[in-house]
Amino acid sequence: MPANTGGLQIDLDLSSELRFDDNQALSNVSAGDATISDTKLTFGLSKITARDTLSLDASTVLRFANIPGRSVSGFEDQNVRFNYARDGVNSRFSADARYRHADREFLDPFAVEQDEQALGQLIGGGGVVTWQSAGISYATGINAPFGFQLSARRDEQNYDALAQSVDPLLFDRVTNRVNATVTARVSPVMQLRASAGLTDYDAADSVSTERQTLDYSVGAAMDINPVLLLDAQIGYTDVSTDTTGGPSSESGLTGSARLTKTLPNGTVYGDFASSVNQNGSQASLSFGRSLQLPNGSFTGVAGVTRAPSGSSRLTGSLSYSHALRSSNVTVSGARSVSTNGLDQDVLNTRLSLAYSYAINDVSSLNVSLNWGRSEGADSGSGITTTDRTTLRASYTRSLTKDWNMTGGMQIRRLKDNSGDAQSNSIFLTLDRGFSFRP
Image (cartoon, rainbow, N blue to C red; front, top):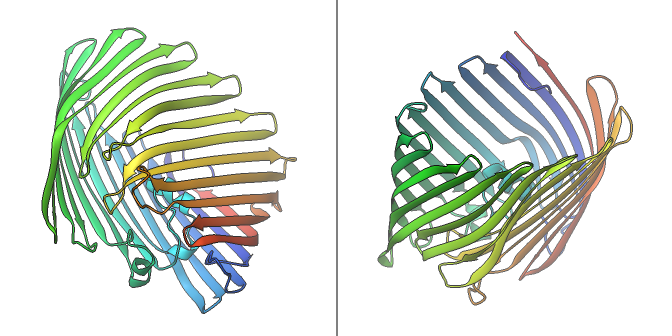
């Protein structure tokens, strides 16, 4: 569907897929074959003016499935997103909201991680998950000597009893955040800032965790010369946690510094960051390079992260794309240390490869590979190492001006301490999308 370039536009999309899978639940021993019919209905409304941008997207899936041990019929995977932004002469206001209610057995964990902008979603199993979030932000004095920014956000995840029985990491949780920042441009090449933030976390885990995090910082951004930018800040973080086992706290100084140099074909930078969470202090040092290529782009970051446990791990990210006359290749990867819902330090590694080839004006071939691993950042952490792999190949052909047909195959693999599971599936999809302006 064409992107909205201005005015009011309504987008509608209808997609119907028939899929056969020999291990839909991705169990170590398959319980039998599954037949799944999904008809996805998508509605989008967008309006763009000189000052406002509004979008509302909603979708649901009409699913009929025969799965070993159960059958599914009815509407599934309700998903609604709302975004609004308004620009003033010297201010900006934005708001967003999201709701999704889905059966975990039918979700692609790699797509969920991309959607949530967070790693750590490789947990298998079924059950139902509900995501709800909303946020607002307001900034004034954008082009003035003095400015003020205020933002607030609420994120909520809820799991049914079946999902919670799959893994101790799946439990209801609510996170509320509020942050305020004051800026002052003291010269044409320097801007100062001071910020304060509060994060409140409430989880229905086995120890009824309640956590409050206070962040304070002061910083500055300075153009050393026309091609060299320094951005640095220092702060203090206080984390207070209350569980059925009693209260605990962590606190300490935080800081960051990044030096960026602009080059004729991109940028190069060095970055140091130190933060505090419920497990203690975490520090990272990294160096990055981004550049524009004749037929693509490259961004790479390499560094080392010291986890609160004291272990040091190589971390970084990679993004590469290369376009030819009739094909396109993209490669991306990420490796980072984070703390999960059980207060464990986790090392997450992801790799994604994609290749598309335009056979002619009406047909194309697409192949993609996603691989991910989650493991303990500390070798003695006791965290289960989990590997997931998804290989997908498809052929798409335009049947008419409006209708497309896609057929292909998909292989999924899951490996953890319980064993190695594999799923093989084939699918056929018909879809049509159209847009109009009232």
